[in-house]
Image (cartoon, rainbow, N blue to C red):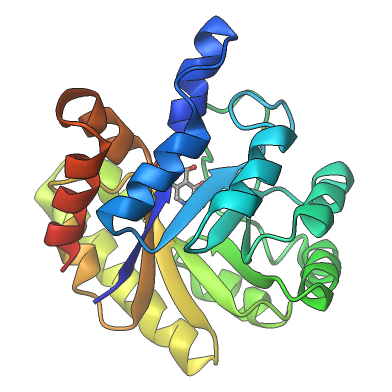
Length: 237
Ligand code: PXP
């Protein structure tokens, strides 16, 4: 049974829409924890479109579970991560114009750069995870970077328009999970998971944590954060 990490960035997105102080992402994090989630995920983007450094420092002080900082390998962001010292860092690719993280990291092309960042973070005691596509070449390259976890990108599964494609993508996730564990790494998964597609992924043997943001925060608008998190936990469990 995987754990649940809740990404609270969308609460900050709403705050930024008016440039004021509400809704407060730090309060959202503590409500998610009270509802039973296992970690809080937050992505400090280079353009600061939602979470900023101040949020991160407060989250670091107030979170009682674990703080998983999603981040690119840009020098400035790595410097901040080394100061904030999240429990876990998930390295993701980042393009300014994207609406959300679009694909996995390219560990084949950027293996050396990624390894250097992994090394720096691990030296500070931060557990490092790499967000990658469910692809053997990427897994092989990721294995050489020194990261402890891989987060498998579930976007293609989640966005599948028909059942055949969805089942094919699910199979890829199952195989990639097995292959990653055989290669000596641990597995998380996330992106695009929601109340109707999460169960099949939650059943994959070996996945330790699912990181979910958009669907939970969207549902919270109607039912509240406490219920939105608890409903997701019930589906996962
Ligand atoms: N995992 C990673 C690495 C992500 O970049 C994101 C999006 O920020 C998520 C999980 C959560 O995705 P979603 O908001 O679609 O649930």
